[in-house]
Length: 217
Image 1: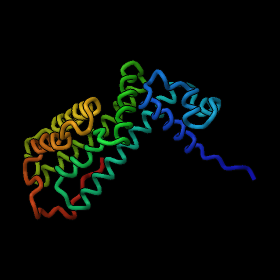
Image 2 (image 1 turned 120 degrees about the horizontal axis):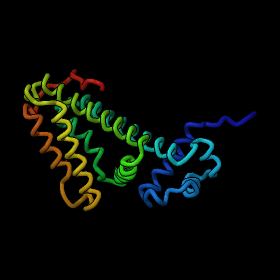
Image 3 (image 1 turned 45 degrees about the horizontal axis):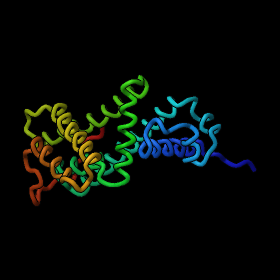
Image 4 (image 1 turned 90 degrees about the horizontal axis):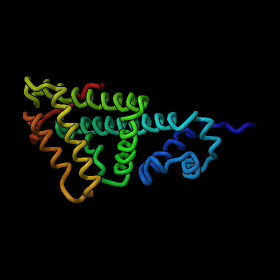
């Protein structure tokens, strides 16, 4: 009986090997031969799934962004189910973008390597814009929902507030990556910036938010 081949598993294994090399050795070192050795496959198999390096780049970037977005959403739903104020839910989700442990540091390095390439690569730039737009819409939706819940002032521009928060996340992530996770309290600094937007009822003990839900974006 012929062996059933899981093509998605193979593509993902190749993409993850490529991401690990990006994180540890940089873009220039991530050749097909090195990716093949890292993934435990042949160069020919990589070429079977990816016509060239550009195709692998785009798939790897899309995969990295999709996995991060899904984890952010899961963290958000978990905080929401626990009845936390939206400011805390948002903080808990966006901390996932900070390189505070080995897994998140690897993901940060992958994103930064691929984003740098996106400056000169139309296909990657499209992926970067889509991923950034998804995250911006998610944070803006949380801010808008905060208005409905009385946690954000009604006059706040949701998109501008979301951009401010995400710019802070990126800046903190860069500092953590360069200085080390233990050099300064990045989550606390992020909390303070989020608190400038969510000014009503942030973290008040006994605040009943059960039954509310952050709208899907």
